[in-house]
View 1 (cartoon, one colour):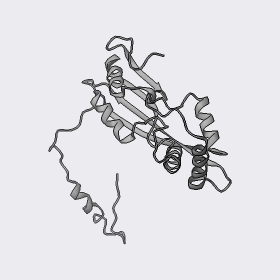
View 2 (tube, one colour; view 1 turned 90 degrees about the horizontal axis):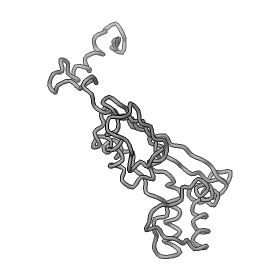
View 3 (spheres, helix red, strand yellow; view 1 turned 90 degrees about the vertical axis):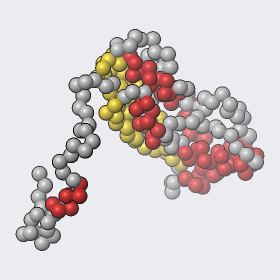
View 4 (cartoon, helix red, strand yellow; view 1 turned 60 degrees about the horizontal axis):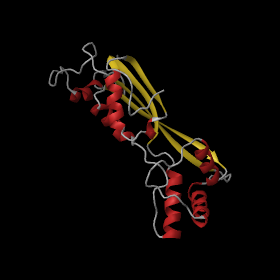
Length: 211
């Protein structure tokens, strides 16, 4: 319940910080993660979910192809999203450890592209970029709807809209947390795993038991 880019809290205040589907609106995501790290107590945890990845790729591609065809060029009409491959790096750079990052793909089906746009507007999820193109011509919109249906349409005539929800967990370091073993301290080699299957000659496949 605060501005994520200007958290009004002191350092080492909270045991837990939660963010649910709002971080895709943050301009300075690395800075926001550093602030979250700061307000957590040692061994505190951050749990977050944000829209990102390949969200709305069907709409993005359809608008680009239609605009190229009708207007000879295209502009960004969908807000940029964080890639799941970058999220772990951002959390690590902010100071978190014991990271967990996952993605859940959700598809919602609509009668046409226009219902997708209506839903996004109703959710307050229109393009927020300052340099966005303010106008899409009617012909371009009709062409985009045709491209959308032709490339991604279902047999029943509906079209899918894909949303990637990125989930993240990161802990603020503390001396009580488990630490990785010192490099070179292993007492077994991965190369020895190939020999385990030969330890039970009584089985036709030579397999052994694992405990």
